[in-house]
Image (cartoon, rainbow, N blue to C red; front, side):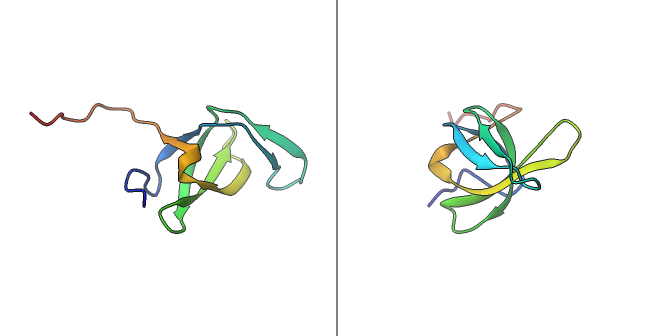
Length: 81
């Protein structure tokens, strides 16, 4: 079970992933480090992640296993003493 990934988290891929474009079906390669947003959790081990371009248009929407994702953080957490 993964308690670290939540709905709307910004995540990065930990490995390359060949996919098909969301609308056109054209072959694409999502590269390690590609940034997406979690839009659904299936069972806390797999998450639906949306990848979109600078124009906001989705080019990939697919389920990805938690072990292939890293949550990106924009602020530090308080450390326990």
